[in-house]
Length: 74
Image 1 (cartoon, one colour):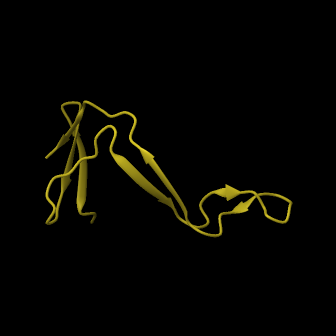
Image 2: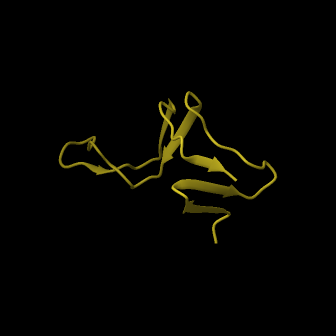
Image 3: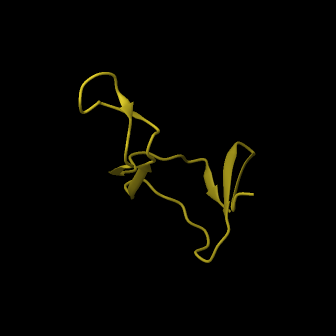
């Protein structure tokens, strides 16, 4: 069972988070870091030939550029 439940009710998404940090939600303009695990995307082959699965994790940093008005943290 995941510690987080996601359900739709009255056309709104409710995200329940369990834990010491309580309720949290990211907002527009917040920083975000995403890590893509090894072996999940194709990258150029360093010795030529067809693309290969990424041998190491790929980490991307960015900013949230838009959000939803239908999210309620419960």
